[in-house]
Picture 1 (spheres, rainbow, N blue to C red):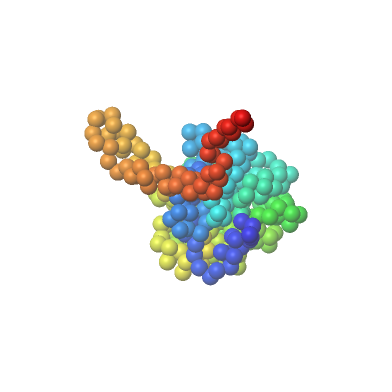
Picture 2: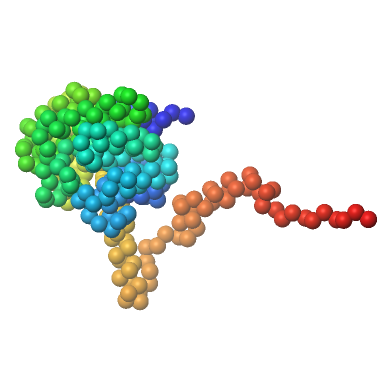
Length: 297
């Protein structure tokens, strides 16, 4: 069986856009795979919200994040890209982060150039480190990959926010020269900016589509024509799930019928009960009660 990283490399070699709904836990990742998508991404926004009930403002530790990634990767067979944030320290911490995400089963890990504590890319207050420090992070990540971590490096820059598109593109070019496998220039504001980003290097680029965010929510066919290889949708599933939960809680509070629920049989199937019982039949003999032997005489 090929490794998650090898499967992701094969997907990126295809001259097409891969639509990538993002997962916030193991269950959402399973639903993404069941829907037929080729890959997923562990969204930091969603992971922080679901695991600790707090915003994505650098509150989760490295250990919590990599544990969440491990649970997600273990639940599916499609490649999972993990959110390694800023690498949780200096360049040596970045190396450890990359190695940890590889051991957790991730196909790739994202390392970004924000100041710690980082911010969600479409929220106020984010800032980036200098270009040299940003380069050191990606250099350390690439070194960890090349020294044995079976994982791809997704290099992200948030420089567009404070320093303009030109600086963001220069950083992306630098990251590509250092050996990053995938590039992610966060929060371009127009289709024209998105085209500039994709034209700047030959490396695969990822678009980040946040409903209500700064980047134009273009249809997949337009993103593919522009040149993107991956289109990430980090909040779509969490937003849909939260809306459904808020609505049904309000219905319960008012004593109204609980509408829009998944059928119990389908719920069990999607979680994995049917598969579990089918597989367990292989070992059914060990579950049968033992009949006491009759005494001789």
